[in-house]
Length: 298
Image (cartoon, rainbow, N blue to C red):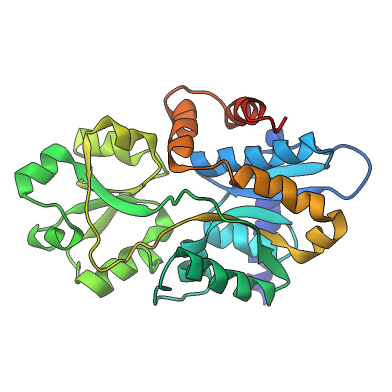
């Protein structure tokens, strides 16, 4: 019990302290508390939904870069957040531990939505873009070792993998790769935040990096995404997960404003927005503001 109390206390501290500079809360009314994960795309998404809601007169608090899926989802279920942007495949495989893949993205969405509604949560409209996990190597490395797919890695003696810490224990991670491909030789030799895998691949300090398919770096042509014939990595359409209480409190205008943003988010759009932050060194806040204004949502 003491360990649980310490864990919950740490979670509260993280959520309440996460990126306080990104927060705005105006007097009057109950604020909508949005959380986001701790990588570029997630930070942009948090700002997009926050600013679009504020433009419609909603009072919003954004807790940006809270942490991994496991942490943000725990905060939502514990009532510390009202909403956060989530990837449907990750929600099923890592939160609900459903390893068997639904037939398609629509089936995955309906399954996840049904599960969440039993928890007094729900999913709003999902986006057309799917930001999947993938394994990538440099083109030079792929050519030298004659590899093009994940099972090809089994031929290598001890390939080095760079990924976020939670990747080691996920079904859509090292756990699943070992189960489906028998990749016992693939070892995590380092932990890296999103974006750090590309300079590590370029420098040769890692052989394989875990990437996201909407990463703007992939447009450079310097990297090869390894095919995944057994489907360890699911499609990852994004759908905001939100408490039913928040929807009831704030009415249909809340979901309408959120869905209006989601409807605009395609793969080319997300790669462009990610690039403006990662390559252009702009803040997620300013990139979100520019996009919403250009599309008539501010």
